Image (cartoon, rainbow over all chains, first blue to last red; front, side):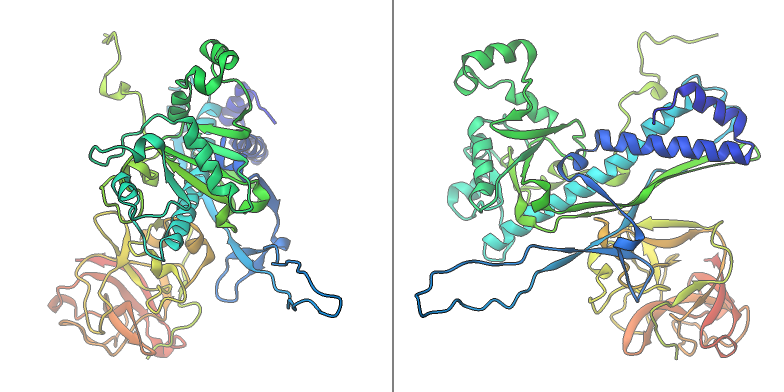
Length: 374
Length: 174
């Protein structure tokens, strides 16, 4: 439900002193949080959330937290037998994983009623920009950390159980297997010092990325990339796009919903998904589950003149089948935990506390023309 | 000797006014309950230069003493919400005074100029204690003015009168 800014402002300034007012604000705020999360989290576009309740979950006997147990498809096959023969037995068993819940919360925002008067910006804007956006960013960050862990685990398995450096030099020396992570065409050919400098994405890069998944009885269905890497795609030539598309792209950009037959998700959150990292995924049913336990909650209170509000949700993001994700790296340096080239901090999500760095520098008086009132 | 159970650290006073802060674990493997060195509730943690939690005292042997301020862990061993978040964030009582019952203590240990826990309002400090063959970062008695280790609380009820648990109130003093 969308709530006009004036309604929220009125509720904050006039109704917050009453129990009825608090209830009403919490109701509006809670609804608003849920709507915006679905809209903007890239994690939710790749792994759509499902609502679950307490009844769907299992408790622990050791502590008071919850998991939801997920069944994974059992193994089965068929075989040729003779008229007198019989098939081999399969004592049925299916793997299961636990999807554990944790909380993602906004900060607890506090402000005095009097100081709120100094803002012309509607308080709903604060809720939207701070609470909702912060929560969705952390969802995406958790998701990104998990998909990166998945591809690195697959890489380690494919390289004999050892974390193996994957950079231009190791590819050229033939000392690493690119099973779940592949370097781009320009990155792998680089003879310069390995770095986190991102090379423009090439059409063969995407095709080779798809083949990492498509060769394992899975199919890549979605691509996740940053806007920065997407911009490089607009540099593709007529040989990549063809005559008609090249003309269209020169005017309107790339306007289609699929790229090389795959849906794509673009993000501007380059502090979470760092430029030069492109992932491909199967359909969600092969990948895992994203559960939301109950509904998002919104708390607001006013004690004397101090207004306090906070939003949170209880979620579980579980990649049950790690084989359903593959990665393309468009830089020449090593992004494994070996960190051979010392670039890991440049290609992995920034620390939680460093997220959402402010771009404007108005507090440092950096705005132009600078005017001093007197 | 205290016995470690499923729940070892419970509040006696209101927790609403406390600042309960989650920090990432410097060693994420300590969130895994199958790790022999897994953290249990009631252990005392300090923060490192990366703003991450680590045990306040080395647990290689019993009898080590903490030299920095530390904070009690309020998360039972193997909690799912700790294991599920990517940084293995776990919660400590970061700010505010409160009263707790703990099983992670050794009343008889005398650690680095300390004293056995014998009296109400005796100051407490943090040391490595052996409980059931496993070493934890727990509470031991301080000798007060003669003891230079940081004080983290004061005894309010002795284990003998509290079902084997040590009741204490927090309160820091260097």
